[in-house]
Length: 329
Image 1 (cartoon, rainbow, N blue to C red):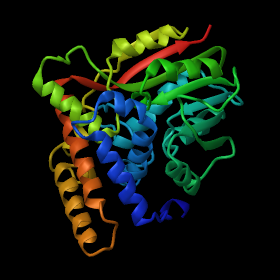
Image 2 (image 1 turned 60 degrees about the vertical axis):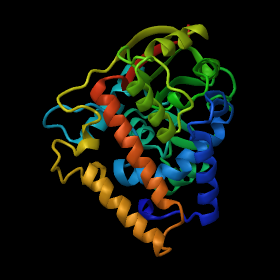
Image 3 (image 1 turned 180 degrees about the vertical axis):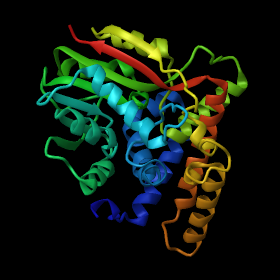
Image 4 (image 1 turned 120 degrees about the horizontal axis):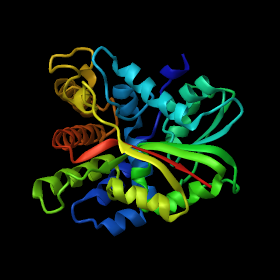
């Protein structure tokens, strides 16, 4: 099967990307520097982590709440289908997915609706992976920057984003680009990772958790839900709806703690013991030169991101499910 094919990457490329990424995520690195070099930060992050995300999460790299009796895969399908429903897509609509990853949501929404969907990602490696996995006839993938979209004005009927706008150094500039390429009357919908009202910028523990999240998820600077809405309005959007999707029976972060329980075998790969096991296997493979030097360090990055997301989720200071529906008049 095409999905099983592995894209070989040179060891020197991996080490160069890792060194550059580490430089931009050190505690001494200023927010302004991360914002100025966001392209390098985000592209290197996804070049380094995409294979790990596919291994642990599948083709959709994000979180969703779950109801009792609902599988993880079913929760992801529901999450994606809800966006298609809110956009009211129909066959032939031209749709843009900004920050499309390897195309999990794109393929599902295209299959459900018959719309033509263009996915854009800053990562050339993700475009390569998406191509290997397969490109439906009504879809296409391109490398590009959602801060400077390579499309004419009024090109798309609808635009959506799933946990990708958080990588923007300035959301207002990203939203201005979306507004430009969107046709009048078109919708812009999405979910994004945001700080909640429970985040206290004077609380040292909160500050530590967010700093760890930013460093381990390739984020220039996390912003609040209020700031996201303000940025949408500042470029001309009418915000018709915005809300935090509430956690259901099983919180979105629970899979990082071991699925439905700490002993869940179903979600072993993302559980604490599964991550520990995987990290040590990678360490051994690196020592025996089966995988590139730095692979264990990349695994450590996943460990840090999982721990920070768990801590943030349990304290309710971050949501990965801030839903917004905006429209261009």
